[in-house]
Image (cartoon, rainbow, N blue to C red; front, side):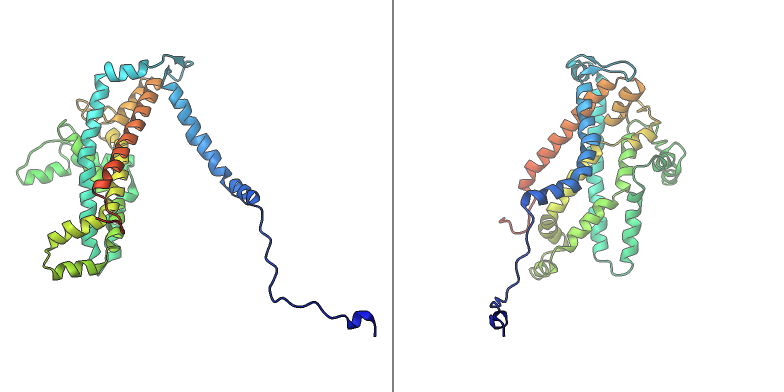
Length: 317
């Protein structure tokens, strides 16, 4: 018998050796590798064009000649010497004030109806959401224009009830309403979000309110709206941002002219006219940056004021 045959085996500890972890810097490096395509896209397609646009807003640039630095002249001309610019601002604000509340009210009303439907719920959800899938395409806007044109379907239906408004498209007092109704018709996206929020409200709260004698309206005002306020705020911010950027419906309704009487000369349509029709790309860039700052300011105001009416679960009243 040799010495190795009688040597006892090392004791078994019963635990496996822990796997070696890669250094933190190495793991972060792998993450940056996967993020590289996204970062290149943000740099090349977002940040760099924004920087060029900001530079062009201080120049006189027609796309055919080299940019000429003029300082703040585009901004001063915009605010002090361009009445059409201020008409486009007022037209856009009028559209936002009309379209956003109507769209959110329509979406919430349909979501409340669909919440309690037992049969065919999937069909009705798809049917109400279908217009939103079409988006703000030129074809839909042209169909909308045909419906509200002089002698169109809407005009003929109203005439049967003794209402003679003529062509809505040719009436400066109604053209903004026509564009707003097209936006309201496509309420599918906020409707789905409202429906998801309604389904998160515990039914026990409604049962307790019913036992206390609360009516349906009281339940809606004192229970549904506060519980749904974060969703209302989310939809409000999104719709507000989108409404300030409306372009295709106004372009189709007015055939790109902003008429009649500049009644559909929305901010983005006027920006397009100055940049691509009049070839004042520096002026258009200045308009784009003012729009960006205005949307940011409105969004900031909404966030600041939301503390007074938006209630989140777990917060004290």
